[in-house]
Image (cartoon, rainbow over all chains, first blue to last red; front, side):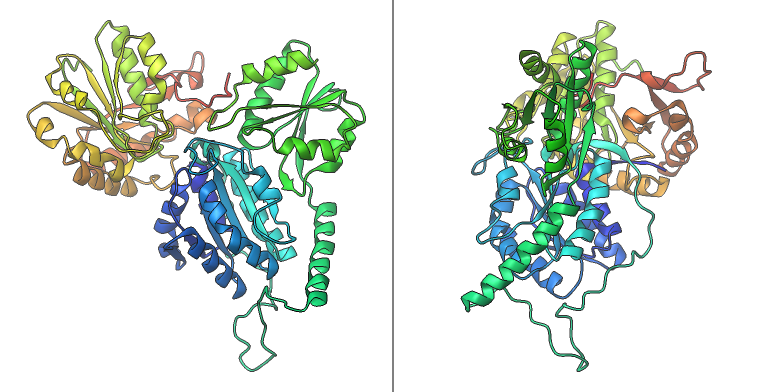
Length: 348
Length: 222
């Protein structure tokens, strides 16, 4: 039977279903229901919910739990994610998997508490110091939140790297019917690298991100980047909607893609050939689909709830082969289908 | 539902559909030509609440009393002094409480005023809402809400739905749950709601169904 869930609750329940039994968090609007759900449910299933003294403490608890080989998660909203940046960099430098949820709100600084997509650059390019990437998934429905949390845990384990669900306040707060995965003990992957006690049967494992010998550090970073190439090759995900004959390809993810889909439908009713490419992975960016679309479309239009961040990746993906336009609202404002339609009408 | 001067409190699990029900009840009364007041008592969650529907309410001449900074994204739990005027009102007043016991705390602060007035408190339930899907869970939640609000519920409203995916069968299959919940809560089942879009032409509807409009929508819906 389907159930009605808030996005934040769905993220929490999906993590539990994916075998996460350790959640470390700190409250912040608009993601607090996620932590509240965990606080209610984790004790019932023998899991650990811990409200840390700060976001920095929470991410370092995730680091510790992950180093011990177990599935752990933390969540926050934009300003809190900035605080977690240090820990995420340490996790990337230690090749540790985990899932980090960002239910974005307006920024910079304390900003506001309404939805935003202004943390795109932070998530895909600058979540901390050093050469590293994390997997970034961008759901656009509550059902997809459920599906992508499970995938994020699996892929984080597979590639030994942190994964982020980049949601926003609208997705976190809105309610939609969802099908939850069947309950049951999910078979989790073996982690022979984990520092979980060698019991005298093997040499001990060390989880560490400090390498004072430059050539060793360079070799490690290069090995990591070779892994990133595999991720880019195998893990790009996107949804294409009415793109086959489209003159104008709109590119939007998350909540703004819902608005764009409505606008595309309205454009089609008027005979305007608009289509949508909705990136589901933001890193790796769905370069292949965009390149394919660029071979027949005439222009692209990125729509974001920011001043224009993903639009740069669209230009890079297609090597500036087509004109790439931008329309965005920021500060907690959500574009309306009518506003996006107006942009489409200007460009076709 | 002739509640001249009566105060109607709408409470329940967060996300069960309190705001949409409040808007329906208020607008139905307003359409009868009554001077209606809606109070957004939700000082817990700044998303999807009555005060977001200021324009809709205004169109029907409904007065809205909302937390002082509602809609400004300033997250301060402050109710305006105007709220005390509802206890003098001779016209219908609908109070949209925040979700769960946490959201009902604001009601508790008005206990002195409520105790001197007749009121009805509708406990809204939704079989499809996670963590409040069984009669037992709902009875427990009601006890928590009553303790926090210091008020007693007077009836149950079955608002079982699945958002835009609600069908006639969604509504009908929740009716036994509603009756069982009301029995366990020792309250009358006032009515069950059915969204207008789920009503099938020509289908016989059982007694006790209140058709409701879907006012609480996403900005991208047509």
